[in-house]
Image (cartoon, rainbow, N blue to C red):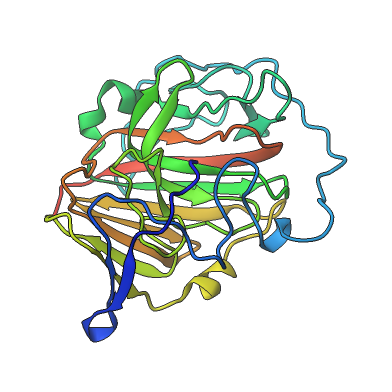
Length: 311
């Protein structure tokens, strides 16, 4: 992620409990001082990874020597009874592409290891090849994926990219909308604008365009974002995330026209409508391997159902 610029927005209270962030269109804003900073080497700040000794200080991580199936296209299977298409065969990385030696399959799940050693400080996402070859197909969908952190380190960071675009072919880095996650559980369930891929969206509530615990609307005229609290606030939602080394979190991302919702473990975490002129309407799906952090994160049960837009 990028460090955020100085706050230029002013907050005003709108009608019916709606918070209106009065900022010029597409101008970034910093998070409040109470929020942990984003940027390499400055994540986490809470939960399992926050405060005290680092539980992973003596942990030795080894990047995979091989990534079987990586870069090999997958013939898409037929949808199941609920209309979902599986995106992972449970055996290897067929259907996905990334730089070698970060991603592999371990015990039937997709595993990502970053050691932060020399030569490993590269941000290389695991890209779903069909979405790279046919990005127009990946406009409106319901994406389901389970994820968990193995490491607890305060500096870990990952995410799930949707409607993305490659902004660095050499490193296979994807910019755009991202379901954010970190082992310190400071960001899980927020919608982030990775590398400003959709135009430097910021809500003023932390670093996310779709902050945890809020409905965010970015109007078509490029004006101020409108924020409305969800039924469950950020702190309540934070307590619903499974700790590192435990059970998998069950995430559901729905992209339907300009609206994108993120639910985790059966609860709505963020609800974002992006009608700005810079909004991304379709694109790449990828799993993020963030640079510079000693970490291990896992994903499984990845599947997608294509939807007809309702708006």
